[in-house]
Image 1 (cartoon, one colour):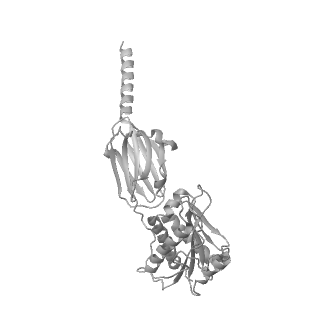
Image 2 (cartoon, one colour):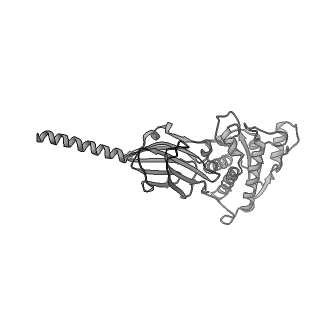
Image 3 (tube, rainbow, N blue to C red):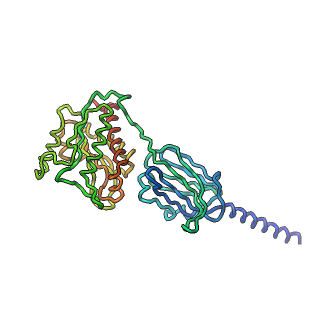
Length: 349
């Protein structure tokens, strides 16, 4: 009889412990990331099956990784790709999200960022909303305040009035590539170049623009070589660098930025590499790398030269970014950072 009682009692304890553990474990069901506004990306982690408290959630920021640690939870569906949705408008900041149950009743969410951010991350809880068919949620608001690493200014460095030539691609009768909603390559390349002109001038450089308005540099209808030579001819004999600004085009799925230099051009290759690094850091698009090519303006330039493709204007998401004033400013800052690094890390000889 005693043996039977002890067996039943043991089974009861096991059931109680299992039930208690289950009661504590809240199931995380979905992660959604989206732009709340122009300044904030919101990440919502939905859950059900129990109660969570703000104290259950903590964050860690390590350069481009944001960790969300959530106690008393199981990863559930969010441990699978189908449980995570990054809306297109949030992909300029968030590269991917990974969630795992690292130990019993503890979930760790890793948010991989395309750019470094400050530590102003807000976390709070929202109750379930039946009218909107939403489960209870952990809400994480991330401010899109990007840390501009390696921003060099005249206050720190003496740039000696070096002459930088900026060449906004296409213009006038030549629109260049055209995006799905009609954004043109000539308009984006000019807008980014004008912003870079202001930043470089503020840093102490002399900037020569091959065009400052929507015009053909040579004349409408001339052969490509004549138009391109007219751009090269805009560069003074003592120009330090020549940077040609373009947007790429292929199809709706092609994506990313890349930079080019002329084959065997050692200084041009260094400039292209620095531009690539800064565009990857501040622009945040897929990096297609640094490549050698025989583009006319690079092979005929008398100074180190690079051609940059800021992104694919034929890609709907990238077209939207390229048309954005804020994103254009980031690209202009990236160009300025690269030029400053070129002259202040042993590239002026």
